[in-house]
Figure 1 (cartoon, helix red, strand yellow):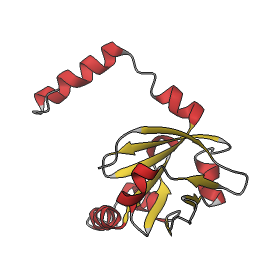
Figure 2 (figure 1 turned 90 degrees about the vertical axis):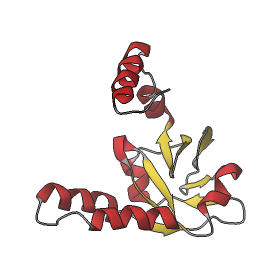
Figure 3 (figure 1 turned 60 degrees about the vertical axis):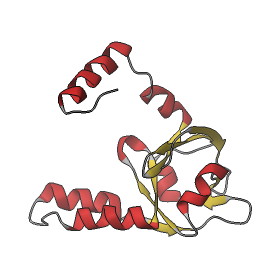
Figure 4 (figure 1 turned 180 degrees about the vertical axis):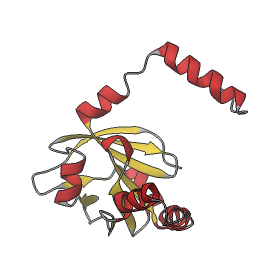
Length: 145
């Protein structure tokens, strides 16, 4: 399970350091793709296969599902961490997530998310009352905090 938040940078060549705490969980080879809300997502091999199997189970007859599959799969690629603990982020994915220099790497349970730092700060500015409302709705689904 991936948890935590780490502030890092991405260099001019598009390389970023993966926090040591996340490296073992990613394994030798993992997948990078577009994520929701403008981030990138890194999936360990096993989680990627589960994710793709779920996408493949959806009917291609629906346009929204075809669009969803294209969104996640067209920009995806397998990755490896170099000896310095870095991974290269392809230019198209750097552009999608607006990764210039300052980034935030976060654990998101079964995957890792890579964020533009400013965007991360904006998206995590949550009103406490909103969280209380969300928690109430989740409690109705049997999830209690």
